[in-house]
Length: 221
Image (cartoon, rainbow, N blue to C red; front, side, top):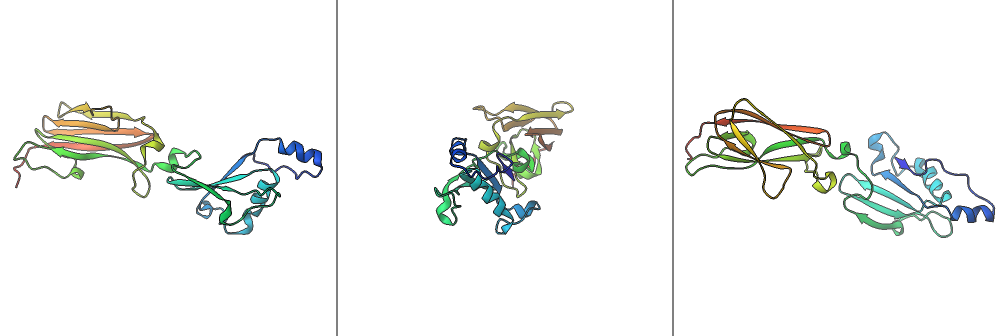
């Protein structure tokens, strides 16, 4: 849970103090969607009442709740009378992606580096992408995909375009080239000689690798 400012100021009582308080900037509070998953009380329990009360006392006017990496919702919680607005009337908007920052550790679980397409000369059997095998004379198209813990793709708009590639092989088993049209998350491999290669990608400190092999071609069925 993140609150700004952290301490709840003491409730003002005199008109002069109230006027000064109204002149201060308004702040927002962000809350996790399922606090019980990280050892905090459920949002449905009274434990959160002091937070809501502190929001009212410090002129905090909005609360943002995030649903994982997909979206967040903003709620206007303070009535003009100084009371807390409850129920559906407090809802204001939904933001996709979430309107407040996400740490990379909350987005990425691992990086998958694999073929998404293989093209071979006519008459040559094409391996399945997941086999990480490339027959001699074939061309493989590789992509690095940041994945969530649920094995879903992380949208590039949430992680940017920065990616670092490393490539290792003994000899020249494959020829590595960049993808056309400046697509940083894709690479192209051409199988030249039998042997192994390792192609790795690092995104936001998360690293994933493809351990591939160039094999002799087999006739298509």
